[in-house]
Image (cartoon, rainbow, N blue to C red; front, top):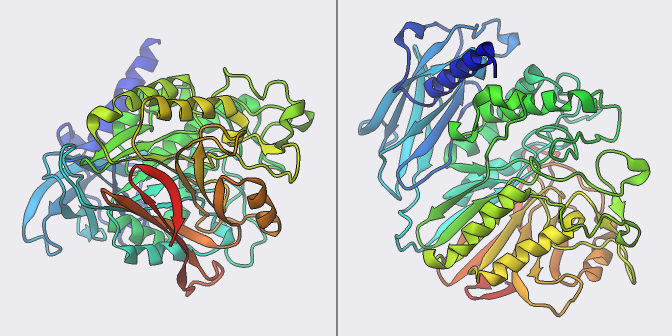
Length: 534
């Protein structure tokens, strides 16, 4: 690293520090800018909760149409955390700096909070006041806890429908939201008669920032972010459809990106994701400058919710080996007959990457010592084998866990060998609900069930397989339920002796006033990985 690169890296690290706390805020950089309109147009959010801390997020943004501008100068924000909505009992307060290099976003890491309790928070910029946010800390790791109620969701394509599901989710009385990928889509404006994203292909940092601003301008999404803390991972569309690690993907039509500039595009996408998510600055292992050099963004983690649940959030894209046996060696994904793919069983290939696998299996080895009732894996896609061919033979999708069957076996083997209690796998990506048993060996229908899986539908994104759902379900008996039509989310209510998962679905994503109903409900008893429909 030369002197200029080193200096730039130090400068960026200082900016990250300034946006994350008030401890290193340079007073000379403060700006008391006055705004013609309220700059908190993207709302507020919280995330990454522990027993004594939480991240508070916001971004100052004014649409071009407003005639006002945030400008390039650093802007000082005040923040407050209180026990009550009226902010009569302030717990903590401080100042932080919103800088242009981070799109005027801030990630305030508030520490020293009490465990297992709710708080209210807000931001101020001059006379402007943000929306009110509500967040909570987790119980201490050794605390006896009676309940955890969380929702899991994924895949919200702007042009495919309204985000009405988020409005209904606010009524679920949740402790936490797990978002499992595809927060934005990188496609250009479409012919959707409902609503189309502004701009063309999302390729550079400014493009990604604008697309996030569009999505985060949605009132229902904003309100759900403000209702409780979120844990997040990503999938492919936060960068490019079907990308895998350092290899570009394929959007299926004229995406102007090339493999040569893909790493630049990926770095821009990762930075924009950080700028818009309530995550800790520590995920940037080498700061923002490191992203452009190919450095990782460490978003996988384990969080403990008392003795009730360990929550593993996994990254299924950043370290992924490229898909194999695509037709004509094209980039992206396809359905493959494994019998004609020599690379398919290669044990060296990984979906999580070798380092993340080692970390995960080390965590599994310590699971019994934690005496946790439930071990929850939040990851982006479908874990169980889904054979698209009826009768003899197999046709599998090479972008999901099916395309990395040896890696999947390592995962299930580790769960069994380490005797991890009550594994529950949550996923997204496929835009369909799939509920099933996690099998030790998917080639043997009679093999042991290791855990259970709930792969959720999308918030809006369309699916194309509804006509064959019954046929595919019958060909994969480890799954007990599937639905490829309805959109929504899942709610999991964890108790020490059982869990209950409720699949919630809106009537019609094309209507803003769409109602919601329960599509199906399942229960699982602690110590017995068997799905029972109720």
